[in-house]
Image (spheres, rainbow, N blue to C red):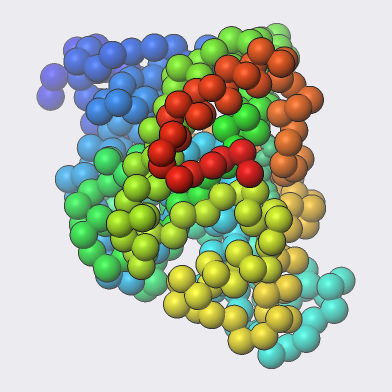
Length: 330
Ligand SMILES: Nc1ncnc2c1ncn2[C@@H]1O[C@H](COP(=O)(O)OS(=O)(=O)O)[C@@H](OP(=O)(O)O)[C@H]1O
């Protein structure tokens, strides 16, 4: 096999390096090189996974795909959907909040990322052609891929897609904190103004932000039975209402308010970030599990943005979202 210019990723040990010089390349925050394909930026392992997924992944009608760009609230959505689908065996048993950890909650022993695997990370990056045929239905997966990179079998089957997005300013701040948390003390934090520039230019894994959002938004308008479009801020504002909507969309409506409260309590940021399983250790692709939990508030950007930054991102936002009916600042 030709391996000229192939990039090695020892931690991912990719067995099928692909030729990368056909793709535009940039460096992402000193973290890794990223490559542009069909308007979106990918790391090399993600590009390889995208190719394998396109070639091999067969969706089932009862699959559920959670989709998002990065630092959007994916971990929360994973925990919520997993709890809605698999964590309601004891719905009739009223449990004291303090007893919660002792009962049969899979989230106590498993990170949300191991409960709902990101297909390009845990599934295909570590095993390019995994045999998923024995996996019981409903299969619950997550992906950061843009809609255009999803295989036809996902787009055309009866499977459901839940997309989540977030205010771009909070997303950018969350991303900055996340990638700083995986830098060495010698490297120190990446300069915020440079991070801001690359966010505005869409130069980060699975960027550009607005293009990612818009294609899912448009698809959700055309196929509202198949694609549920959610915003982080909506869930924060009305957690019960949104989680009920989510459960109904997934075909698992709640039977009473206690159930709703239980799922929300189990998936709260405070609880998850303090569970042992999320405090130590790392994901299969080497990211520290505690780096997925931070403040979880709406509006943290105000602590980081200058007035000029606020105006610039608002301008890009208005330009990109004009006439789409979508407002990400609400
Ligand atoms: N349970 C729960 N509830 C509310 N908010 C939560 C929860 N879990 C994670 N978070 C916040 O989500 C942000 C991380 O985004 P992602 O999970 O999308 O990250 S990733 O793309 O999967 O790496 C990050 O947001 P910031 O706090 O603003 O950085 C997390 O704190």
